[in-house]
Length: 127
Image (cartoon, rainbow, N blue to C red):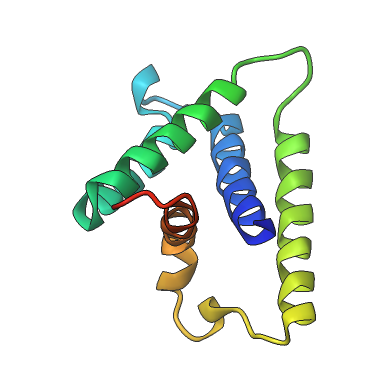
């Protein structure tokens, strides 16, 4: 479960970092988060509908957590991102395995959906 937590945490921190970027001249609905989240979700939809639904819920949670608060979001997101990656590498070191994305970058991009599928299997949910 620690793998699931760190990968999903990395995804949520990425959403928060994108949320923190200035919007520029684009209309409000097309901020950086949506420009990245929509293709990610469409990729999940191409794979399997249940993965798409799970990633949509995770993305919605991330967007809900990004709502403006009293302090800037980016320092927390950056700190969480760094800590999660450190935990990821420590976990790989303890397991004695090399991260799969060192051999193929697509593993880095599909990681959250792959771990969501692993969670579905643990919960005996068909997908």
